[in-house]
Image 1 (cartoon, rainbow, N blue to C red):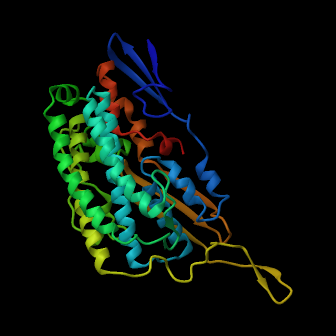
Image 2: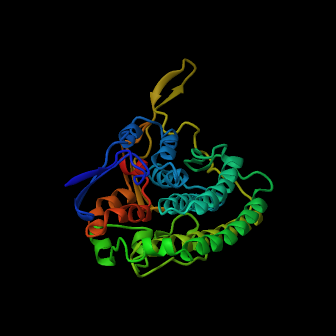
Image 3: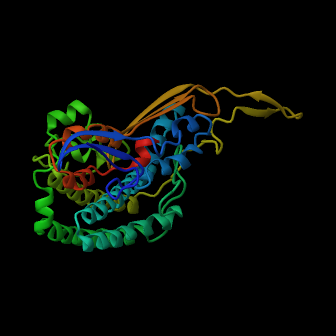
Length: 378
């Protein structure tokens, strides 16, 4: 028989429906139903000025908003032929890695709660709040930031921010060891996660699965290394890998990614302390792509023509490889905006890592996927 786990179900962590065909307690078929949260962000973006679209990016993924800002901004800058200053590149890496930490800690807290471990959930939410405090200090927001701008970022860091960030990184490194003791030392965790939801490297490549799920299958691919953007080519870090391709492997990969994010952030704040400079490119108009400009003393309007261009951007956001495509036809709005969501692909492959397991195995398996429905539906 077919049963519905959703669209409102503790396992889904968002508004989507997982149709499951069961034979007793065994899963025989899977049909993920998405689209409940579709808001038409790509089409709306074609009727917004370039910097106005940043507001939509924070709402594309509600746990990794600043990463999606970075994704879109890079594509928009290529389409508009804008080059940001060097300090901006490091600031973008800083906030993207802090967002990766906040996203992974949120995943950890929700994931372990699904397994029945309540204390790690409370610890995770406590530690994530420290990162949100930093975001609030220089963006004004804890969830939706609107920090990026075409050509730079809205503002530099307030005085003393780098020292406070260092203290937070020291605290988090101690907590990560605590997380491992709470989970890897728990018989409940190991019983519910080992050898579950296996998705081998060959299947990951077939479906286009990326991010921690791909690296948990032993594939050494990370866009920050393979196709560096921003300032990642100037920083030292390792790619987190595991080889068992199961739920436990995905946990191990994300935990190591958080340690590597701390390593990156420490290098970035050291660089920022010794390299002051502008955070916005020169001669970037406040109202990008404004189509009319007044001329003469009578103020007649003349249509202004801009260089056309196409921007393609790809980043390693917390869930996997995200891509943005922006077409500039010389007007005040982008002609076309298109996004590729890694979670959409990971969910589409659900049949390959759920069929054959028990119904009770679905929450830990889907928890290890780290679903963000906002970016799935867009």
